[in-house]
Image (tube, rainbow over all chains, first blue to last red; front, side):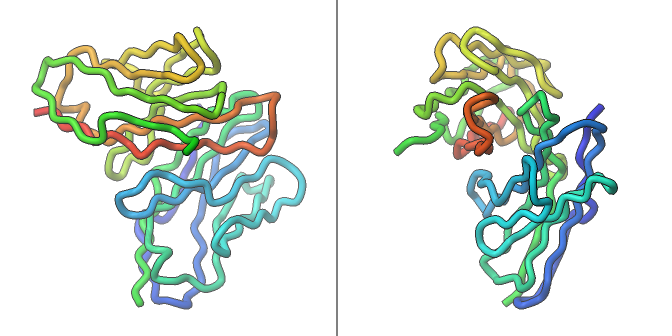
Length: 113
Length: 116
């Protein structure tokens, strides 16, 4: 069965630190990949997505992610986090013919000012 | 404003009661889904629909029913509520395939359900 693994369940950083959240998926075919963010008390919002083309995807708020097909990975990065980045982050993917995303368990990020 | 509207925002049910969580979107999206969010479990797909009149089961469908009589609405019915169904429920929609590659799911604000 297709699945998504997020390696870090809880991450605590200080402001200005760099961030990398790991995401691996298990599916052998074409995939569409997503990162969503959920701020405390709010619903999920799309950060960025990859369908095809340049494997380095830039999203909102300075986030980016790199699709490495050989590693089945789609890690999320940000060079310098801010306190306002405190949130839960979800990786998701949809197989090429599905368009119904499967979500990872999420990573809780806390950024200390 | 355009988007996905869920009602109610909060609900407390007694074990064995039934209820319907409402979801409506005004973006003419083909795809709609229901997820439940539980601590440490992420979002798990309950049911989804790829168009009016078409529904299918997701990862955790037991205890829930859905129907899609119109493009706009996708209600989720709890047949006989159980404490294990205490969760936050999110409805989401997307344009679906063939329309645009520039899609991502748009989520509603959620319904927090407690079953006692």
